[in-house]
Image: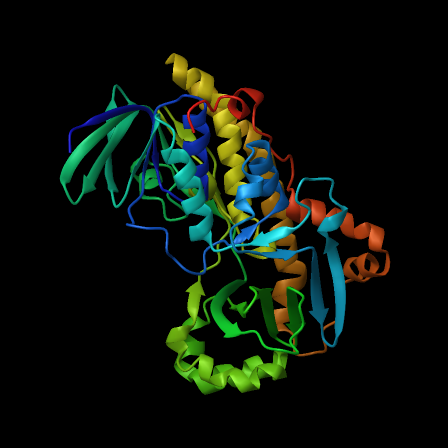
Length: 410
């Protein structure tokens, strides 16, 4: 392939990268998204599209078409402590275009964005294409070295964005290292069929030393079995029968589905981490999404926080990229805009981990819901506050008017 020059080159075609690419191209910025995989088909990724993201889709006049894709809607979130169930978030109380969480395979979300973006002349998507290194000039990043099946080439750009996830190679090549804040748990993901007589609610179940989150995906449950940090190999070594013995203590009704997990190899491990960069940028480069801050799965907010980063970056940088006047101060503005929501969200996740998840995993005594959860369940009007934090986040972003109206050729 011949070398390419664009105003912005984005490494990573996940939610943050694809959303930023689409928004910039919609604003008339020439942009290339480099994605190492040949498609978006990867399971057990962030499938929870929260009201904050649905509001962005509404502002872009994409919501109606987006919701035509197969999805399940969750209007309330419940948690079961021992034998008692508590409703702790009611998204219907939010004043937004879509007051619910949409559960949708991430590949459908990304394919939808990619299709809309490809209609824009300023947008380029390369896949499979792997970023193999940075191009630097006079101490600033000025592009990416890329490898495809057709060979190696270079993409020069006024800005390189690292949106390639929590293990970001572009971030590492730039010398940006995150600070870790720890997590007491890891998660096994798996699927089980959903049958007549099963409850409809998406919920978390807390029992003696065991936590299971069940996400209603229509004809199946997407399950997150929470385990103490570092215990994955020990649990796998004990074998599938030992795993089932523990799982059935949480949900006895799953006994008839034992054939659906025939081996511990059917369990997909998510190593939970919370970290963030002290500085998200250096001259010519900006990190967003998981490359800037890895989130715990608590609340399912990771994908939505990444998309908020993308919206903020597009709002603040599109004009400078088009004019060729982008500076380090502009990149710092993006971090200042998104750093506080990131810190506060991670702080809330750490509080949840330390106050509820960690003790539940260690405990052998009957589990009792914390007082705040009991109050929220008893006073329904309080449910709007967890719904707002989970569904909209802290300082939700809105697409700038010039980007909303900038679409002329899709």
